[in-house]
Each structure stands twice: as structure tokens, then as C-alpha cells.
Length: 490
Ligand code: NBP
Image 1 (cartoon, helix red, strand yellow):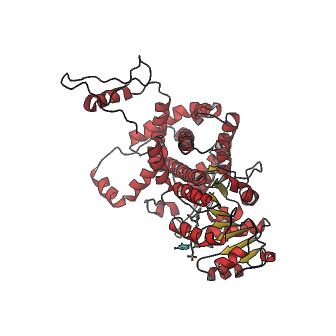
Image 2 (cartoon, protein in one colour):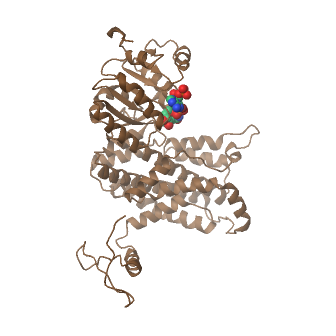
Image 3 (tube, rainbow, N blue to C red):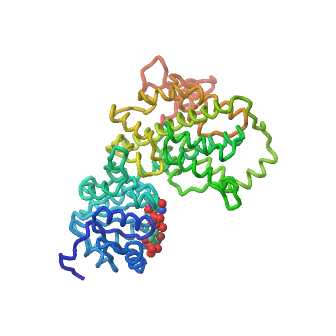
């Protein structure tokens, strides 16, 4: 059904009226944009118009794809907020016949980055622009200001920049937590790393909680006050803030609700994707890896209950200065967090190189500064580090972060040592410290490892007194041959 141009008033169209889609539409409408909406279950269009969007004259309903597309100004911008996976491809196929060259499709769901790269290329061949964007902050973020991480076809960015930056969260300085991330699947890649870092931050907080609870015997109310204090300083962040509130929350019977919750963690997969990408690219993102595996271990509840009856260990008992140890835990958490973000940035740097993306590292810190789950004061420091030196090799080498890890180091070591002595698991604290010690080591024991590989597999080694790239094989037993295996890199 052809409609006359006078109906084409919508600045953008959004398909997918579930929690994220509805809230994004209202956010856009509040910012003065006219938005057309559509949904697979068409009845939800009128439900939305008559309920949450009631009174909004700049929200228009389409009851078929044709009617929806006809409401859009040219070049048309169609945003999908639907379940990730095949559903996105199905909707692309559905809208494509109604679009023309220069129109834009945006996927705002949690898609896996290779899918976004594939879709960007496929649509570019048809003259259609494509953006895959991470949107973080959940329902509240979508409504009041999410962190938005768009990547895809760079020609598409000017078409939605004003809309996205208007609806995005703002930093305390007033900057929008949305900027162009990079080509192809870069936006969804950055959202994936964001979620991985979120796993790491949450695990670190959980370890601090367990140390205070089981090691120091503190009550949830006491810990509430500690987190409240932490939230006023270097650790000021959304996750510390909600932990503060969770610890104070009482169940119907007046007991702390947190203690009545079963200790088995769920996960949706983005942390796992980050780990897989790190393994694929050969980047030691150890803290996120530990955070994912810690969730897996927590999920083995029945087996752990059995094992707890059979495997013994030290009974946790702390006999030192508790107040001083709480401060040690704060410093261990801060230093470990620095390692986690340093690892996340190492991963993004490698991904950018591998995929040929031009990532804006300071801009990424800015996008995460507000609106999203990992928002924190700390991200302002990362932004400052990249502003000072855009080609910074590693966050750990920045002056500010060097000062913090230096200042926190003794506490960090005491916490890990004490936890091991008390038999309290601290996989994220420990892996962060171990990584830190490995990263700052001029010489690691990989010389022995190379000898072992050459011994059993003739895999060859390089020598400290010869140029890099020259490979040697030794006949270690006197019985092997002189033939070496072809060298390979993983
Ligand atoms: P959902 O992920 O639950 O998706 C709901 C939408 O997908 C509805 O419009 C639904 O249509 C449509 N849909 C489904 Br489900 N199956 C479909 C199918 N087979 N064919 C066509 N349409 C189908 O909604 P959400 O929680 O608002 O999330 C939207 C996207 O944003 C997801 O990718 C999600 O991962 C991402 N995200 C969510 C959050 C969050 O906090 N929820 C945060 C950040 C990102 P229907 O109404 O007809 O069933």
C-alpha cells in the first residue's frame, strides 16, 4: 500500500516492543523524535499505544510492515530490538524488500559480533547501511539513558548520531555515553567485552563479600556500611552501590534476603563469548575467565555439597586487625579491577588489529562511564589515560594506574595470602595478582617449557644469545634424530 509523503513523519522506526524496545521508544519520544513502532505480535502495538505510550503524539503505530515503513522519513532508519539470533535475520529479510539504497537497519539486541560483521557486509552489497549496537543499562537505562555502543557501516553513523547521543546517558561532565565504536561487528564486540568485564567486577565484589563474611565474621549490615563507605571513593560505581543496598535488604521474616538466596549463578553467555574470543586471539584475559568458571563451579551445587562432606581444609579464622584487613580487601579489589580492565583493553586492541577495526579506546571508556552496568568513577581515569596517550600499550603502564597498583600491592598480597591460608577461594583476586606478577616479569619459565616441547616433539626453540626468529633443535636423549617439527603458532 503506497502512502503519500505527508505520512512519512517518523525520524526512526523501532521493531520489537518488549521491555527494551518500549523504553527506548519512550526515551526517543521524550527527546522530541517521532518514532514509528511495530511488533511481531501486532496486538502489542495498540497495547503499547494505549498504555505506556498513551498521550505521546510522536509515537506512531504500524500494523503491518508496509504501514510501518510508510511512516518513516527518508533515508529510513529501522531499529530492531528483538531476540538475538535468527530472529534478527528474519526481520532483516522482512523489511529489506521495502527499503531502498541508503536506508539503514540497526540491530540493538545482544547479537554475537560475527553475525553483525556478516550482516553489515551482506547489506552493504545491497546498498543498505547497517549498524549493530550494544545497548546497556537494562530497562531503566533504556528509559532514562543507556550506554550505546554502535558499530557497523561508518556511513550510517551520521544518520543516527543525533538520536543516539540525545537518548544516551551523560557523564557528570555532560558528554553522551555513545560514540562511534568502529567497523562491522565492533559495536557488539565492545558490548561483549563490557559484559565480560561486568562478570569480572561482580566476581571481585563477591570475593570481597565472602572474605568479610567467612573470614572476618561480618554481618550483612556491617558489610552494608563497608560498601557504603567504598562507594564514596575510588571504587564509586553502580555495582558497589547496588551491593550496598542488597546487603541491607531484608526478607519478609526480617533476615537479610541475600543470605536466603541459593548460591548457584546463572549466565547468558556473553562472558563465555569474551573468554572464547580471548582464547581465539591468544590474549590472557584471565580474570574474566575465572569469573565465568566461578559461575560454573557455583552451579555445581549438589556436587559441592557432597564434596564439602568429604574434602577437608583449614577452618577460616582471622586473628589480626579486622579494620585494617577490610582496607586491605578494598585495595585488593581496586588493584584486581585495574588488571581486569587492562586485560579487557588488551583483548580489544588485539581484536581491532585482527579484524582491521579502528577502535577509539578513550571513547569506549567514555561510553562505559555512564548508563551501563559497569559505570564507575574509575572509567573516567581510563578515559584520561587514553586522552593523555592514545597509543598506550597497556593500562598498567599509565602513571595513574601504576601509582594505584604500587600503593595497593602490599594489601593485595596480604589478602591473597590470607585467603589461601584460611581456605577461602579468591580466584579473581589471585589470578589478577598472578597476572600482574607475570606481566612485570622480564623472564618467565617458558624457557623450560620450550625445552620440554623440543624434547618430546622436536618443536624447536629460540636462544637468548641469537636473533629472534632463528630456531634450534637439540637431540636431548642422544637417540632422537636431527629433524625438527614444523614450527607453529597457536
Ligand atoms: P526479548 O529479547 O524478550 O525479545 C522480545 C522481542 O522479540 C519481541 O518483540 C518478540 O515478539 C520478538 N520475538 C521473539 Br522473543 N521471538 C521472535 C520470533 N521468533 N520472531 C519474531 N519476533 C520474535 O526482549 P528484550 O528483553 O526487550 O530484549 C531485546 C534485545 O535487547 C535482546 O537482544 C536482548 O538480548 C537485548 N538486551 C536486553 C536487555 C534487558 O535488560 N532485557 C539489556 C540489553 C540488551 P513478540 O512480542 O511477538 O513475542
